[in-house]
Length: 241
Image (cartoon, rainbow, N blue to C red; front, side):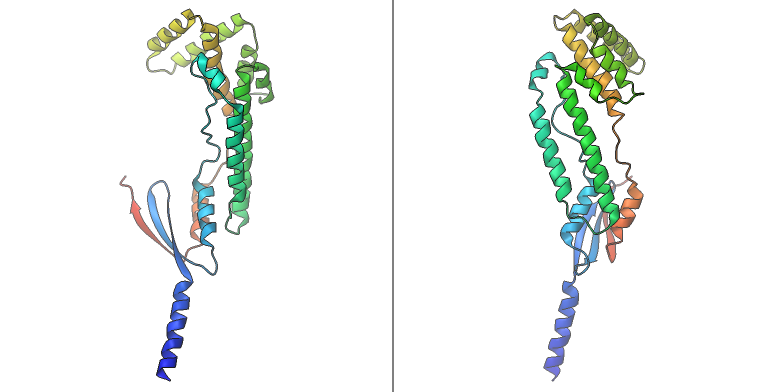
């Protein structure tokens, strides 16, 4: 009889133990180890929700800017499209924890991803077809000013380049060096291409990028919701301030 009782108690204890698991994650400063109930929480959902919380889905790796004239032909619309679809499918396939907060956050990241992709696609195309710049312009955006210059005459493009450099010199720690490099490029046989490249990158892109609607994630709120899925959380390690 005692053996039967022992077996029952042991079986119940093992069942209780088996219903908990651990998940390790980190934020900007600390690493944590959380204990959760497997009957209520799926570990894959924890991992996927954490990815949604911390990964930058709008940070494309495909190059969309030219630094020198020979870079222009290397820019690939196909590469940015492939990367976009990979990131979109990754977002859509995440098995998130059951909460409307995470569903809403995912939709916000998809909107941001679509906007960033559209901007980058237009940027690549505009090096050869500048009229496409008008497809991504807010009515009150400064990007409209640069789109007009890049679609203007060669003289307007060169004058716009000069004005851009002078604006940059106001905040540059070494303005004379910047003017010296600018003077060398103006003397180059590819001066018009350099003008277009710098107007595209430091004028058009910087302005249009500000018009992209970014995800305004409340990190503190997100962290608070994420931690509610654990029955115990230990701080494993923190970076020294």
